[in-house]
Image (cartoon, rainbow, N blue to C red; front, side):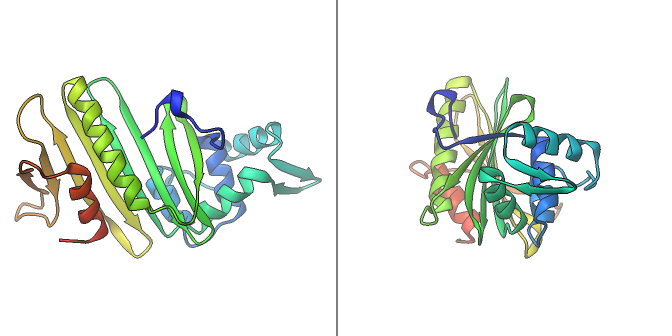
Length: 218
């Protein structure tokens, strides 16, 4: 998770329509996955938001226009390659009484990035080094979110892992009550098709528990 005061200089701000535009430049096997995770699957490639995205990318000087040909530049080119070749995503969303704070991690052969959704559909995109363990990031984000929600009086952290190999995400949710034990909701589904719920034991770390489930560990 990330606060406004902790925003790195390397972070790149984008709007949802700019991301839609990027997904039309370098489409690949990961494009549909990126659209699904970010909630953009229902918008067509020629949607008016795509055209608006190209215009704002041009204003930012991250595209080069030569007649009918449009070429991506700088951060926009890097992110388009990552989105178009994405092989896996993590979605860690903190849900409090007053605010919902989604964050994402994307992995691809072209690179890795952390993405934070801000108000007004603004995405803060932070490129990550290839040696960064995304599960370390997941564990840290969940533990930090639990601390924030305890101070706010409770809430939930929704954690999901998406991959190109599966149409169904792996889910591990942590409920932070006003008082008492943290609760975990995860698969396998019960006889009613619902996530199984249990209390975390004393000393059981929520971030590590979620990490193991999303990694496929028992």
